Image: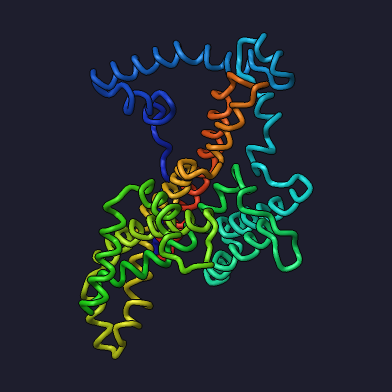
Length: 361
């Protein structure tokens, strides 16, 4: 008679090893120092939470005038409501507001489809590479649409345009610079290293000032480039140098034995890089690469120093309205929430990419 072994079902863990109390005992109160820090943190939360909740919610004014807000004790969210158009699209003409709305729908629709993996990798890359064309056409006009000068772009609209175009352009440029820095050709390597180190050696504010003030001096007579496009060029250049170093770290982490095996199979250097080394390197550097994209999104707030009113700049300008003086805290809290929402979404997308890459192994 053949006996078939059947394993017994897994036993449930003891009650003392699961639940919130076990987690707190092992993570927060596992030794004297951690217990003291936990108690201090709880005391701070108990002290600060009630007044913050009162200011944010219970005593806040959600609908009303500036005078109503001044009579209250909490936040004046009616100020954000009154200035919401300025926060989102700046001084963009109200009668053409359907154009930035359509551009935003394209952006977030493609992001949602990519994040949910409704598109194949090839289709997603093509979609993102082509996305700036309809966005700039819709927002800026031309080819049948009324032209809107870039001086009328502002608010969250301007921040997203600078960030999205900057990310989409700086990632491939950074990859090219990283490949150039690791190339065997001395001339290509020297050029790549010079660009990377020169750009990384100066702050972004300096690059923005040079793009807005010095770049026009080198242009031929009669050639003019708008300040927005000059600033966009500076942001792309700055981000590309940092992304190049991130990608270079991934390239160096690939074992040389894979390249040697590929050479033994008859593949040339370009095929080895494009088909074997680079795909693996990009999977490795997904977390720092997403981190650089998030940093680029936040760095766009520096364009206010060269006269562009991005999301943060328009919030400061809106709070200077004589009717709503004194409510700049609400403006900056609203900006902080939107920045957090965008950065958190990018972070979650990066984690999904990382998990997908690990599962593919």
